[in-house]
Length: 279
Image 1 (cartoon, one colour):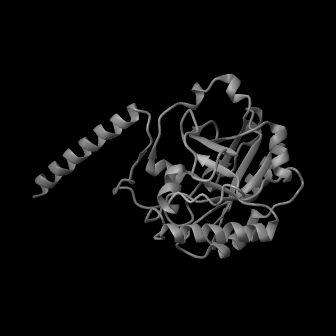
Image 2 (cartoon, rainbow, N blue to C red):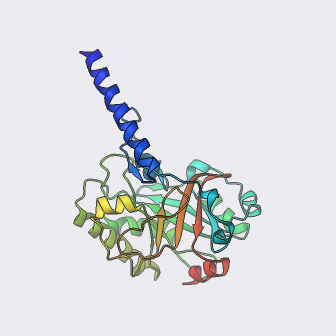
Image 3 (cartoon, rainbow, N blue to C red):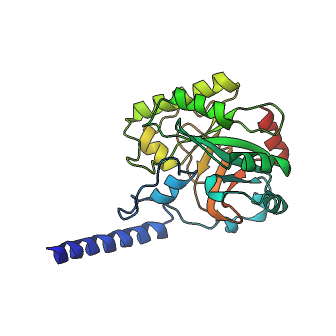
């Protein structure tokens, strides 16, 4: 029986691989479930893009983008406790001009490296901000927004502080959409961004991928008019945007960049970046 099962699994894996290769050759994004052999991380260990890396396969090389197109972007990075003490001066020397640091997750986790990362990026001259990794199955959007603001996610109009980010993506701990219906997920996100606006006066940036947004919000289009978009896609082009947005503010284009891994592009010049920080 075990040999029969292994044979069935092998045939399934080969067929799945052929499908992935075929779709990749057509330049399409493939959603894939994480391997059953890989255990879920412990709560608190998530980071920006963890779900995108596990669930989505994209094609393209960021380096293939023409130089004249690159000139309209400003390079940035996002970090979490996984990067520990970051070499900010190295990143600054390489042209990185902004950074986001994970501050919180749920209502119980705080990044133990937050001070070095958040303060260190500011110290070398970067514009910086904080992000919150959402876990909608653990507490309300309102409660998580409060926790975020109270533990590093606040905003100030000093011209060097970016608005806080809601990182909402494939669940690394279980069910992809955290056990919520599409309407339930939209309500959770709305509660978070409304509370963040009330507490800080700024509209939170929403970080997500187009495929997750389509699957877990049903392609809801109601946030595009107010909340800036940070889209995740590891490829040479940003691709289709989530419903409701006609443009993106930031793009996480790779998880294997120099020094810290996750690299991003602000859709504008350094001057536009500072204007965005001011609000």
